[in-house]
Image (cartoon, rainbow, N blue to C red):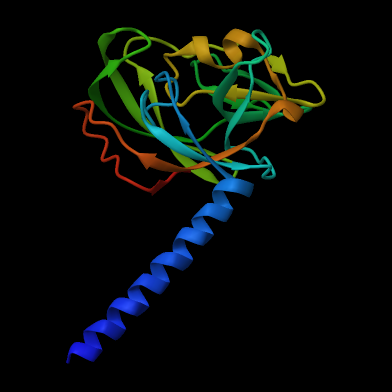
Length: 210
């Protein structure tokens, strides 16, 4: 029996060693942990949470990317790709977001109370599931406000980024304009560790992010 447990321990240590090597290789060549500093991507991830970035990945519509802020060279911003070169973005007369003058599909749910660090206050937000590209991702829209975007055509080599927290306009392309696609260093694909902010968002360790 002692030999059995010794053998099992040996296998366990071997597997752990292999996983550490794989993790080290991924960290060196492909994956970077990044801490978020604001709530513009809520509810997908919150200020203070660490997420994992896959460097050098192909960027698709709906991906969460990290790119250089065109209005502040040397600083990076998070955002979801909601427009690529040649696309026309805007809002219709009901305040619904449009791509190529077609309303983006959103499955609206209920409301919740959320402490928004960017606004430094408790706000009531309406929750929705938005479909763009191959992603279905959650969004927040602040109650009794309208999402408005002047019609914009994305230039060649550019990406238009929006935060999933549509009430936080200071950290996406509504504030600093479209970003250079060449400045984007990768796509966010996983939450590394959550923070407890009291909101019932069911954020966990190692959650894959759409």
